[in-house]
Image 1 (cartoon, rainbow, N blue to C red):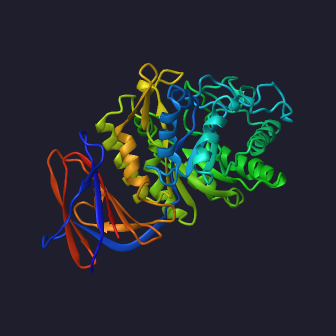
Image 2: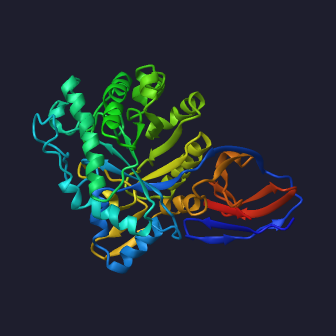
Length: 443
């Protein structure tokens, strides 16, 4: 059987290099099992204010280059699912909500006016490159007057019927306001990092609270107002550091996803589950229990602002882990930031692209290429395929709807290694560069 096979490699020294293959009689160390798994819905990143500010340092040609790369269906990443915050994320220029009028439970003063400064222009520019871009939104914090204590950071939602009804209406108003602005919100996730009590905008939730809010307030509010926006149970994380869970002698994430989804009334409203950060330790159990739902890695872990190769290797392992355990989509965090990626509260984080405001230059960081190996090759509608062999733990395989096979594989070793890939009664051999990310396409 005649095959067309192409391969591409990224190393610390080479951004994108073709790989050559030869027929071989060696014993295979990677085999496609033929088993089909979950559907792939796509890839994306998050729209944040500091990202749009970083982009403002570029000239028109450079901006077109970035947007084409990230969003155009023929670009390098072809993003089709992206995230935005409801109010301020920790990468907003300043903290805000869409209604800080104390006691306005009727949401008469709800406004997305601030979003017209950064977020809406950022999203609309992306939509010119991909009009079919889907969007999901989540709050980092409710309006401060709805919280105890009354602050964007730390704290919890006031658990009073009037406040809960008002907060559900807050979500409704957000979806409606964005629709009026010409932007469709396809999903809402109830809270960014439900277990995060942080010095940046945040709000702690228990599983019982998520269940009650979705079942008795948010779901009915969306029904009442005729919204077809999906409700997702997300985004579920874990305390940081992970050792804090161990001190409490529990790592039972069923206190969140399992508890909520086991309630028929809440389950009826939920279309999927979003996991991020240490949620990676729970996703396997949730997928096994509820395989009929859809799953998303809602925020790539964000590093320390150095954009190092070693962290990119860790991030590759996250892609491999999440897809191997059932996610349908993988969402990066900040797509573009200034050097060191410092947030308004002091954390320096990685980004796919760095824009230097003085030199007006952009740099494609290692994680840009990790994402490219996946998002450029694996199209929405693909199915993940099973793998076996010594390299299976370092690879993920997919079959696109057009029949093309895609294998994305990492060689984390300090020397070159041979890959012997078995397919259609043939063995194809290539040399994987030391310390490399690779994608292989078979037609």
